Length: 181
Image 1 (cartoon, helix red, strand yellow):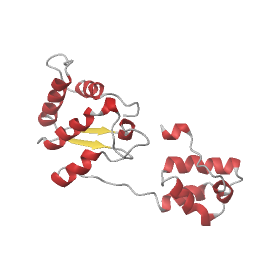
Image 2 (cartoon, one colour):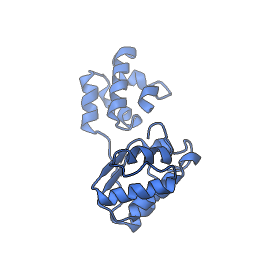
Image 3 (cartoon, one colour):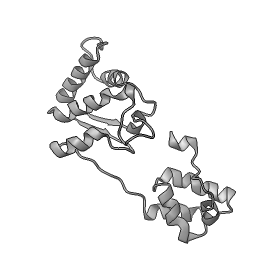
Image 4 (tube, helix red, strand yellow):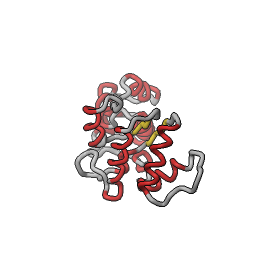
């Protein structure tokens, strides 16, 4: 979901996976119906990563961009339908409809991943960073994300003489655009 595809594009891509008796419809309602039939007919695992890319930035968590609003209805349909497949949504923000569906539907669940804990400290130790008493603060700033911590640890080595304390004196969090995308 990194490039915020429309639901129509996502459905077309998913439908291409299945054997086609006919051409893929141009009608989005028909595409949804076809996919729901396939989810019932076959045992499928669909993983949609970076779902947060469909949301408005700077707004209430889980609020969709205008062109992505029909995903909400799509996810609700999948959750309410009886089928033998599984849809995993990976996101930094929880969609509002998922919170609502969790209370009504036993097949809808959320798993919140915690930070790396000791593994994050191991990354910093592997980079031979100093000021160990400040490591926890650094880990918290980068939310325990291993990729961000690895990148930042390398930068601290190169630009701050391996001193986490010197790095933390900067008022702004430094994060490469390549890590956010």
